[in-house]
Amino acid sequence: MLVIALAVLVNAVTFGHLTFLAPVVTDVAGLGEWWVPVALVLFGVGSFVGVNAGGRLADLSPTSRRVSSWHSAGR
Image 1 (cartoon, rainbow, N blue to C red):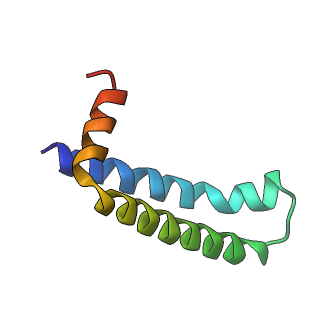
Image 2 (cartoon, helix red, strand yellow):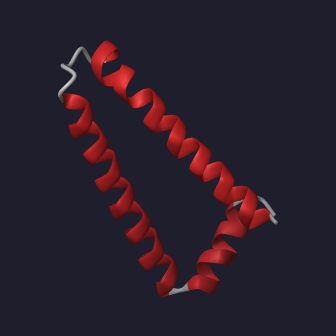
């Protein structure tokens, strides 16, 4: 159940970022509307690279990563 809750949370945060990306690019950064697709592509590439890097790091030593994550969380 915890895994499902975390998956829902990750998806909600991702969609939240995508929802507010266009106003941040156009209003806050002051860039033109044609920069919105560029920002979306950069967000997607960054997400892809981050997920792949995290997965590869976790595959190197899943037990020690789990233990260190558990320990750093204060449990």
